[in-house]
Length: 157
Ligand SMILES: [Cu+2]
Image (cartoon, rainbow, N blue to C red):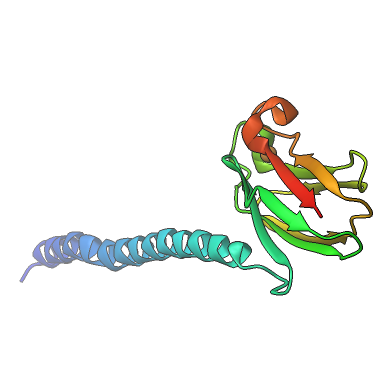
């Protein structure tokens, strides 16, 4: 075999090796991308479920989202503390208000003015001092106070 032929063979082999060398690299990259996609999807789903689980099981579980407060009517008694675990499941991708909600209950009964950042929750309590019907509201989204779905009623007996 002449030297030229040997060189030609080497060159051919080298050309054949190239795609074989690229393939494992490409498939590793592919697997990494797939894991990243599924991993972040799983994280998003799990973090959402986790944030919807109330921190305080003894408190009244309430959610605030773009569709309003749930429940939006509460009954309480004078002198008995009302403890609320308020959960905001909305994420910061909401264009209206950035997923932020509040709970404002000031008129004549308490001075609660809370901001619940996206995908978080807060536990708070207050004690009604007199009977009557009181309104709380969210003022950070959807027209705020003017939006009827962003309201709730507290009936104190
Ligand atoms: Cu709101």
